[in-house]
Length: 154
Image: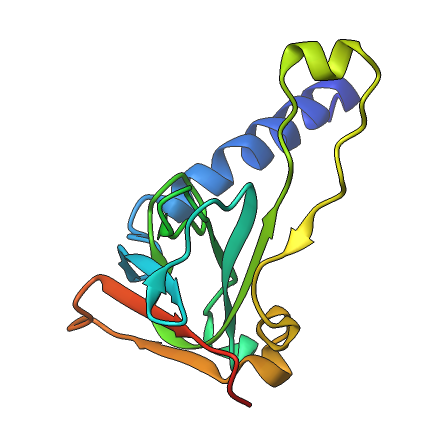
């Protein structure tokens, strides 16, 4: 057989195989989740940088990490593959990070004034899955809204 023809056949099969394999696949079961983070009973506001992370308790189940960026009002919407698509069905440990930062005016910036670095707005126990104490079980009947309550208590 001609070497060029053989390469062409292999290339054609290699390019079409992923599409053929995915034709009957519906993908993983997903649940759209949005929520609100509160700290000491009030919505966590004035967050310049913040993330809510859903980390699978058992990675072998097909669950996958999902993240949601904290908005200035304390709300978030979870993303796994595409923006706001939700979370794969499974059991998760949740972590939260929330930082404030001083925003300078144009005049302050041009005068050479430096902004202070980011400041953690919540107890650092919420930054890691081993200490956060936050969990969620995502299943077909999940309400789609999660309220995450943070406190200073251990």
